[in-house]
Image (cartoon, rainbow, N blue to C red):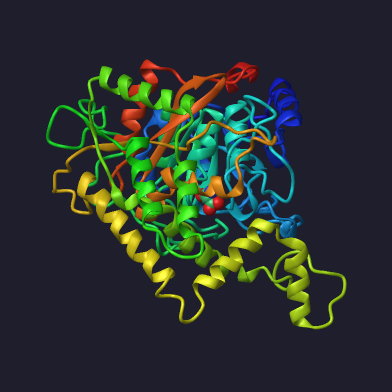
Amino acid sequence: MSYKQPEGFISYCKEWETKIGAFTEFRPETETAAVPGGAAPAALRLSSKEEARLSSEALASIAGLPFAVKDNIAVRDFSLSCGSKLLADLRSPYTATAVLKLQALGAAVIGKTNLDEFGMGSSTDNSGIQKTNNPWDENRVPGGSSGGSAAAVAAGLVPFALGSDTGGSVRQPAAFCGVVGLKPTYGAVSRYGLVAYASSLEGIGVLADTTARTRAVFAAIRGRDPLDDTSRETPAGAPPLYGDSQNRRGITRRDSTGIIGVLSAEAVAKAAAGLAALGGQDGAAEAAGAAASAAVLEPEVRRAFDLTRERFAALGYKLTDVEMPSLKYGVPAYYTIAAAEASANLARFDGVRYGKRPDWAENPDDLVDKTRDAGFGDEVKLRILLGTFVLRSGFQDRYYLRAQRIRAGIRAGFEALLGGPDYADAPAMDAILLPVFPTRAFDRGPSSLSSFAQKAADLYTCCANLAGLPAVSFPASVEGGLPVGVQLLGRAFSEGPLLDMVEAYEAAHPFPHPPGYKAFWEVNQ
Ligand code: GLN
């Protein structure tokens, strides 16, 4: 049975969308294949093995609902612009596995959302298509790169959306817009249908209005996919996504108290300052100093972080300070690896196989040059140049290989605290609490964050990608009229316990909404 979206919902969506511009393509009238809150349509049933993983409660969080998909994830017959002028006219001939799994449960894609071109950025302003505004304040950015998905969920146009997270692109916009953002363990969700930016770092993630829905969507999309060889089933021994009723507090150790390690801004700033002290040539020390100051939390973010800490303590968790000196190398390592992989992944956009090509070219090389010159924005060009530089023969030892060693060090640092791949080993703590971004949603005026400061500020998010670990960002509080997010990071495949903790927080401190927000079921009658 199909379900037609009511007029009230369609006009609510259109009104918001003219203000925020979250979508690159928007079809709010799309019918869903099931009634909201109902069971999955019989004709579209998943295999019984998969179905068994979804409780009826979870199914009700997805079935019959409209959802949005970041425009770098393929949905058949929709655009796949990747936020790039070069691909503005591209229609996808196929659908990503994660999207297919949600459609099979009776959810329907009602649009594709705006992003920083190819996922490169932290504001969505690097989109070659349009600007997206933050629903809390239209003069501010929604964050990025999944800014369109975050804005659409925050404004109530969809209860959930898919995004991609290479270095923070689900968690940071979720924090800027006041929604939940889950970056799953590397490989937990198939990347088939996600246009690659930095393949070894990224994955498809979930943005949603509540923790329960975030969990349900993740339950639906995860799992091994033969079309993506890096995708994996949850390993034996890993904590269950829907834990038993005695342990819905996210405790993974053989103990009754949950222990949360706190990686405070001071600890991170101290590490970042250490980088400046290392000195180096060609202005490296100055750059490192500027990066360290860009990582300092603004007072409102600081207040929200301290408040979260107190609130978790009041909920019965034990909080303990942790340090990770290797984090000071996180941003340089992240940008070295991400740019290197981007320069290889974006080589396919040559005007021959994909994209808008020029009307006239002298020869094939000229065709490629002209296509890229007109099609790619400045940030993308910068990253390609950086990537080809760090991969130049003779330079690999100096940059790329060193970055890979740092990456291994960061992973080992987290494993020492949270436990490694052997689930029989009891970890020292259940999760790590850390900031998402040093500022709240910033504006577009002269006080806007520079592109350099935005990169330095990825410090808090990119480490989860370097280590391949799951992390979830959620709204901690509203400060000065804008939401502030914090994140919890856990050992591989510990999404269940992480979401348990967030759910405990949400139950005591319900998540906020921007003025003018109406829940899907309020406009949908
Ligand atoms: N700001 C980061 C970058 O530009 C995050 C990107 C992402 O996660 N896609 O690389």
